[in-house]
Length: 400
Ligand SMILES: Cc1cc2nc3c(=O)[nH]c(=O)nc-3n(C[C@H](O)[C@H](O)[C@H](O)COP(=O)(O)OP(=O)(O)OC[C@H]3O[C@@H](n4cnc5c(N)ncnc54)[C@H](O)[C@@H]3O)c2cc1C
Image (cartoon, protein in one colour):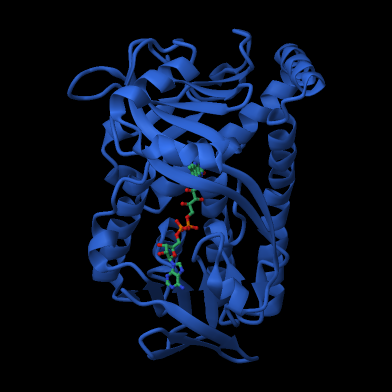
């Protein structure tokens, strides 16, 4: 089968890219290993995604935003960074930016569903997307003129450009011979939704405790019980996370309230629990012959700075712009010069925060007394230094 562009992976990034390119006269294919039912109705996966104002704008433009019901879009007004048992917090307030909130929080499964619906609409309207669900990209090969893809079912596809959107552990990127630097933090994150007595006032917490890291992502109050609600993230060495996933809910609630030093009062589990191993990935190249990476395949961020999907949307905006421009002037959509430009822009946008995130996680998870004292000092100095806080606020809003 012949296409102009094949996307390997129908996660949020792959689907958003298909949506972004639909309607410009290209024949697009999305290959996704999950069955159609899982794409139509994605299961809750515990992730509450913090989106910058810029990402919200891109999602509006792609027609995803209005498909998410308003109560599922939680405003992120402020961010508080805490250290150890001290009640002191460095506060990044929304007043440092131009909006009444720094960004938004949306459940990952709702983003996935909105992306699928948007693609479905494009498919009905333009008829230019072939969605191959339940199919796995098994092998790939590119030459000067064509990208060849073989699926696990044995089917073969060809296109002028192949795009990997198949996660940070992208097998397509690997099959293209592109190396990647992986950093395994040896820790896992447990994520779930909990209700609690004390209001979060729509502030996110990043709490570098001693022996653990906690994060709280403020969600809108539970629509049924009107209780305060948050997505709670606990980071621990992986072997300590696993038993917490199956711990009896009452005991889990008690332990979480204790870990949060009762600052939120009584806490009650309000969803399933999910664990994610922490592995950050940065590929050595983002493009190759008739090949490009987007989404997590282009950078697998540590979630602490909440930028994975924000960078994913940037990569889509950037690559879709490059491809559309080339197609509009009758040029090759996979011309090396265009792909190089895409890579350079994307690296400039992501590499500094990727490296800064690695540094932050090293400093803030070291538990020696000098490291604890240093990070306490850093938070106090940071709190008084407005230009620094403005920089963080700009990163959280996406510079808008
Ligand atoms: C705990 C946690 C919290 C996070 N919080 C934030 C946050 O606050 N803000 C933020 O911006 N980001 C956050 N992220 C990151 C965000 O979830 C990811 O960046 C985003 O989901 C990546 O989307 P993707 O489509 O690139 O990859 P994925 O979601 O991994 O999708 C890849 C798709 O490719 C498919 N696939 C894989 N291999 C093949 C193959 N060979 N053939 C066919 N299909 C294939 C898979 O089935 C999957 O559907 C968080 C991540 C985690 C784990």
